[in-house]
Each structure stands twice: as structure tokens, then as C-alpha cells.
Length: 344
Ligand SMILES: [Zn+2]
Image (cartoon, rainbow, N blue to C red):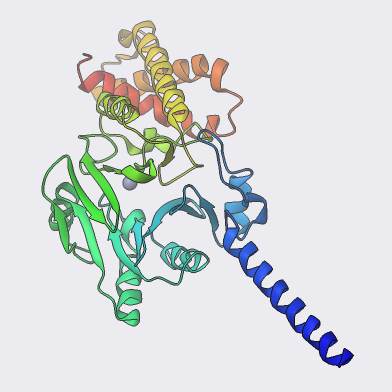
């Protein structure tokens, strides 16, 4: 009899341990290859050491809300939302990063990916879409591929290199639903591209707006992320700041907030001021050399303007690790914007 009680106690103990372990695992706020990120963030807070982790880990998974996650793979980020019946992914990424997104999703749920959103028709954000089509087929589920009209049109223009959308958001602004989630969809003009689109996950208060600002790192990819028109981007950023959200995923850098948009707008202003002043200070006549081609005069003038503007900006931004790598390109794109677009 005593041994039966002992055995019963042992069995009950093992069951309690198993239950406790399961509850602990289910209650974990974050599931990540990097345990240090195992906490929810407050709005405005960054994932600690993300630049280092994204270089070391296959992926870094950060839970933003009850149902929404940011997954960082090497240079890019994607966003996914877990509904009661399936997962919605914003941007499949490329170069095998899509598989890492699928791996990351498996850390949070066994539900299949049933929705895929295209933010804009750029290869680095969309080229792994076929992996998601294949995964859905393997699981025997249908995959919604959702694209704003502007993105679908770019796809047609460039030969639909990626799986074609199954749903096109006709209106701008427009919307779609995924389970209980409502997503506001808005393409905001000649910014990073003609089709670059923001997505507001309304109930989650998460904004997905790729290739705009670079949270935490401040100095973004070259030429202000390949910007088309600086003023259009400033207007778009001021507009999205008025919407109701707490967390931002721009496809690169850390988790963002409205503070990151403010810092980016300040950066653009500083680059405009420095470049505008340099354009006034450097005399074009100095570079007119009649025997040479006129384009060489312009080239030498623009080089002198860039030299001058970069030195002005060094005072405030020189300590940024990327300053010497990217600032000159930001000045060059600003020079062309100031020449081509009238100021408002
Ligand atoms: Zn892009």
C-alpha cells in the first residue's frame, strides 16, 4: 500500500510538473532564438541588441501584441498576425528569408499561413512568395494573396515575376479583413516607390510601412531608401503619424514608434538645410570650363556641394556608425530633389 501511494504521488508529481511546464511555455510572452528578447516591448522601446542578433541568429522573433509578431531575418523584417484559424504574413521577403519566416511562425502556432500581403513590388520584399504558395499547397489550404491596386499594376508592368494576387484592394484608401482583424490599406504617392503601401492592423495598433524610416539605426539605406520625392515621403510620414498605432515595422531596423518618425523627419530637414545652404554657397560659375563638356561642370559642382553639405551634417550626425557610408548619398538625392521639385 505505501508503495502504491508513493507511486501515485510520483505520478501526480510528474503530471503537475508537466502541466506547470506547459502553462509556463504557453504563457511565454515571446518565443525567440534569442532568449534575451523574451519580453513584450513598450511602445518606443527597441529589441535589445537586434543588430547583433540578426547577424547571429537564423531569425529573431518579437511579439508586439497578443496576436502580432515582427520577425527579423538578416537585413529585413516581416510581420505576421495569428488569427483563430490561420496566419497572415506581410511580405514574404527573398533569398531564403521567407523560409525563416515560416520557421519562426512554427514557434508560435501550428496554424497554416492562409494570407500573404504584398507591400510593394520590389524583389527583396516579394521574391520568396512561391514558398508560401507551396507551403499552403502542402498543408491543403488555400492562400489569399492580397495586394493593393498600385502593387498589382506594378506586377503587370514588370511581368508578374511573383505569384499573382488573388485579391486586389481596388480602393485607395481601402481595407480587408482577416478573421477578426481589420486592415486599413493606403498607397501614399511617389515615396519609396510609386506603389509603396502602408497597412494599419487596426485592432492590434500595429503599422506596417516598409522602406520608410529605419528605427533605432536612424541613418537609412542609401538615397533615403531609394526615395522618389522627398516632400511626398515627408507628407506620408506626417499623415501616418496621425493614425492610431503603437508599433511600427518598416521592414528594416528595429521595432519603430512615432518617435522614430519624428527623428527621421528631423534628419530630412537637416539634410535639406545643409544641402540648400551648400547649393547657395558653392558658386556654379567656378566650375564652368569651356573646353570640357557641360555635364562635367555640373558633376564637379555637385561634388563640391556634397562635400560642403556632408561636412555641415557631420557636426550633428558624425558619430552615427553609418555616417561615412550613407550620408553623401542622402545629400545627393536631396540635391536632385531640390533641383527637380518646387518647394511648397
Ligand atoms: Zn523597396
